[in-house]
Amino acid sequence: METTQILKPTPPRLSESRIQSGRQCHKRLWLELHQADASSWTAAAQVRLDEGTQFGELARELLGGGVLVAADHFQINEALAQTAELLRLPYLQAPMLFEAAFSHEGVRVRVDGFQRHADHDTPVFFTPERFGRWTHLAVVFDPALKEVRHYANGELLASSSLKETAPLKIGIAELGNWNDRRNQGGVAIRHLSGAMDEFALWDRALSTAEIAALAK
Image (cartoon, rainbow, N blue to C red; front, side, top):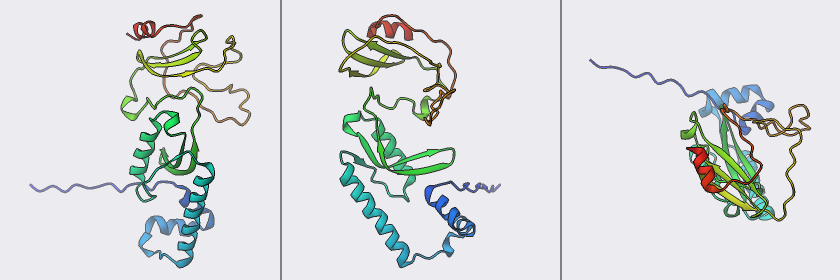
């Protein structure tokens, strides 16, 4: 008996270029999505593309000290993979990414310049294969050694030195949220997307062995 497999069409994804097309003309966006073969590449379009390429090159020269995601705009999956791989590197090896690719809920973007933060940076840990699993996280502020240490499941992820130390004082704080939701002050919301089972706060710096024992 012969069977036929019916493939579902891939839903269109949103991108910066499609947003621009939609702002210019709704019909243009519809044609780009449903009748892409009907469009023609004009000399004026090529000039705009070349100008964008030159702008990116000038930006890289001006900012410097970064790594280029080599996959072009037609190789989005390759660009996403390259970006994820570069984000796993320590900050000093890739302090800035050029043409970094990100995708979230059907929206894809390429970022001209993505500046990473050097303040206690860690390699990327929560990759898709780790989603939906319990994870033990720990951060140790050690004023005696002048360092901050990050752990995941009892293993040291990264450590960074502190130029100077001061007594820790916790003001307004929320578990699982980056900033006070009562006063966003223009800061992006960076809350925990998940569940928290337990939380513990110690009045001293725990050793690596103690963190490992707590993670078991």
